[in-house]
Amino acid sequence: MNIERQIEFDKVKKIWADLAITDWAKEKIREVSLYFSENELRKQLRDTTDARSLIEKLGTPPLQNISEIKDILLIAEKGDCLTPYQLERVEKVLVAVKRLKDYLARGKQFNNSLAYYDENLDSISELREEICSKIRNGIVDDYASKELGQIRNQIIKCEEQMKQKAEQIMRSHKDCMADNYCTFRNGRICLPVKKEYKLKISGSVIDKSSTGSTLFIEPTSVAKYYEELELLKIGEENEVYRILYTLSAIVLESAPVLNENLAMIEKLDFIFSKGKLSIDMDAIEPMINTERRIKLTSARHPLMDKTIAVPLQFDIDENVRGIVITGPNTGGKTVAIKTVMLNCIMAQCGLHVTCKQADICMNGSYLCDIGDGQNLSENLSTFSAHITNVLEVLSEADKDSFVIMDELGSGTDPTEGMGIAIAILEELRKSGAIFLVTTHYPEVKEYAAKATDIVNARMAFDKETLSPTYQMVIGEAGESCAFYIADRLGMPNEMLRVAICAAYGKDAVESYKFQKPESNITKKNINKISKAKKGKNNVELSTKYKIGDSVMVYPEKKIGIVCVPINEKGVLRVQLPNKKIWINHKRVKLHVAAAELYPEDYDFSIVFETVENRKKRHDMQRKYTDAVIESES
Image 1 (spheres, rainbow, N blue to C red):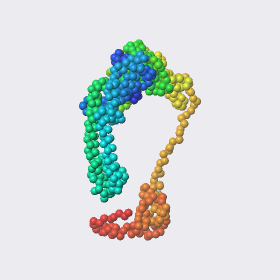
Image 2: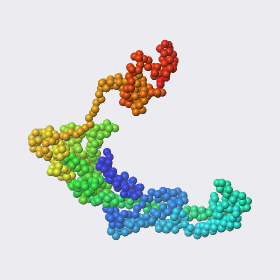
Image 3: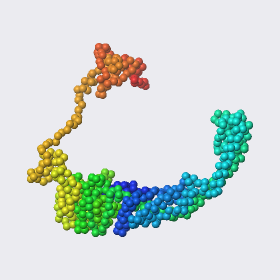
Image 4: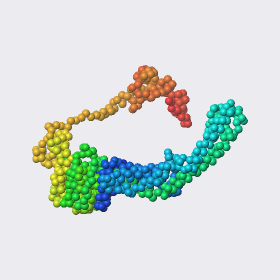
């Protein structure tokens, strides 16, 4: 059984996971489970309280997702060279570690035990400053080393000399130039020389214009500077790699400390996410006991709007094992038992609970049977699935279990269902588990009233306003109030009399106070089925037009001859000049009847068939032939 889905703890975990920053914390939240060690559970709850306290006093902690840094450290551990971008990411994480360390240190003034985690963080200031001094804006800085600075200055000087030399040649051969500026082609500085003056400029043709009229020539006097520039760039590249490899080695040396920092960030992210959830849900730290005692004051379902949720008061001690809850439909029975279990599970997972006060016992297991378990793929009805689930619950329930069951014994014959409900209650009582069940059976209420360690409870119902109050009253049995609700929703008094008499006898009808005057169910206007008329119309249509009738075709108002009479769909075929068409009889009007145009035994094939087809048909009547009569469009 999926207990988390049935009581909606999976939805709470989704909200909780959204408050975490790191991937590790999100995954841990998805996999979080109950704590069975009292010491560990108390520590987890204390962490949640400390996290909430720090957030309320100092604001949200400076955490960030660190999954990218883990990949970078793996690259460094393989001995590969880190890029400037990757080194900057390392530096940013170290800055985040320092900020987090400072944040926690400020929390020590409040004597918050969580604040002392700062001692487990090391911002590695030497590495951070080294990266910061050598890497800037995604590249190795000019001042990363004296040699790199000198090489880059020489590169700038060489490029300037190349440009000056090219401009000097351009000025001295102005008439040979297609433009009055130098350009770079394939990384070389070139002069735009007119094709006809190619031999006047000593140098190499690097490129030409699309029309071929302009040649881009690198002068020979400039080329020697290019060779010098290439050597300088090789020296620059070598020095840059030397610096990057040096920094990568320092990162590798610091990898163990960095990994410890990352693990601490993930742990703190998980802890602070619990504090954020507590604030968002306006929750409190529960007291924990092992004496099988649950007391919730003004509890509410954590997923319900706290401005409209009606607080639940719940109290069960070691002398009571089970509570049988009765009350009206829509009265909040299911929400009540889910609220109790959900708060208990949250507490045992180290979370705060949505109550004013709470004293919750630790449980070895949480078991439930809620909702319609119908399973079409396994051919299980609602009742079959319900019993299957109940048997699984009973097989796992023991003295440390907490069990909730909704609508006990429902889904079958009421008499047999009542018997099964009592049998289930008796088995639960023997197991020693704490259990909450809901039911409508009066016999189950009577059973609970007689049992020593089971009590009745009811969801209150205001009969003056005919509405539920969503308050649980422990120690009293309730009633379903179905007649009151049906009365309120407009069921006629006569129907109610029949229902009450069938349920409780004639005497109960006389004592019932009807809320509304006598009435009947008002029938609403509904669509009526129109049946098709048979026989007559079809006969009339089939005889309306005969072969040979002259008809007017609308809207074109063309004259044609009927060649196929009306079929069952009301369509006939008409011969028009040069073509035959199918047309609805409503678009046709009789012009001249065939009887007035043709003799009684007239052969209409003369009008409607081609000469070739008539000849073939004549031959077929006299002898065997392979000829085929072609259909006419």
